[in-house]
Image (cartoon, rainbow, N blue to C red; front, top):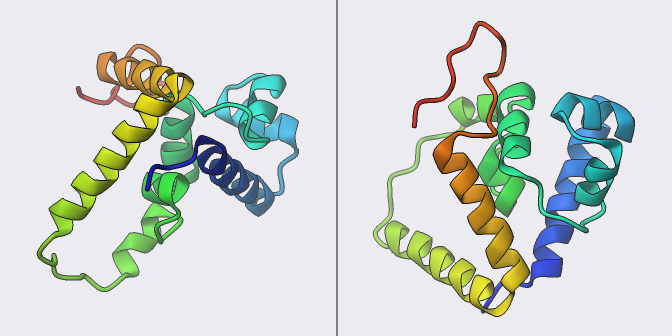
Length: 144
């Protein structure tokens, strides 16, 4: 079953709002923390647009948010909580499940040119490390 773009964006917007609520930031404060304009942040939080790769990066590094949780709702929400979870053995078919998710995303991208454009644009920015700043002036940039 292909993912629905509106449903996907609505899920991301709810998760983004829950992060903002957790830290008790206003929209303006959250936008500043993520390096976004207030209007771009509002579009992300209201489900109008897909957050850019550098927003994912800042959520991960500055807020310790699990990208798996942010994109798919997989627990845990914070990366630090991954250490406290019991280690599960890889079940056969784990790769098959990931491939099924990839196929589902590709199908959705084939049906929705805007989603395709956004995903590919963000992927190439990430791949080329053009928009991902280091977490602080003393940190090394992420290696490709």
